[in-house]
Amino acid sequence: MWEQIQNAIATLGFPIFVATYVLLGLKPEMRKLRDAIMTLTVVAAKSNGMSALDVKTIIQSVKESPSKGRRRAEDRIDDGFGNPKE
Image 1 (tube, helix red, strand yellow):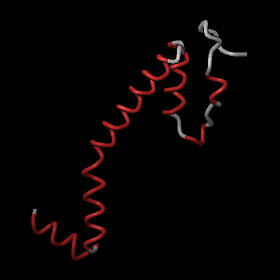
Image 2 (cartoon, helix red, strand yellow; image 1 turned 30 degrees about the horizontal axis):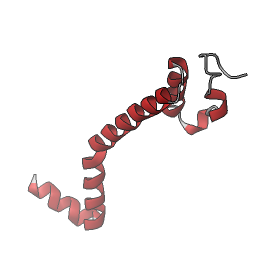
Image 3 (cartoon, one colour; image 1 turned 135 degrees about the horizontal axis):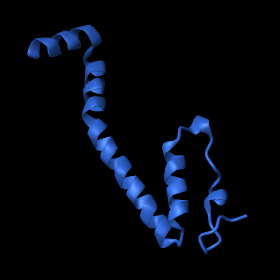
Image 4 (cartoon, helix red, strand yellow; image 1 turned 90 degrees about the vertical axis):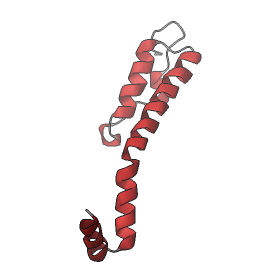
């Protein structure tokens, strides 16, 4: 194991090795942060009176890649009775 680390440092250089180590080490933390942001999104939407369907739509649009096109924020807001705003 130690020899593999030394070979990686010698081959790639120390800054590249450290950057790779940090990125791989932070991946689980990034997932936890994503989940926390999703939870806060749901809480904020519910506290602003959004329906469950609207919250689901927001979460799905966040999960999509930007190239697939996201709906505008005004399209996701309901009329206060759970019906999409027209």
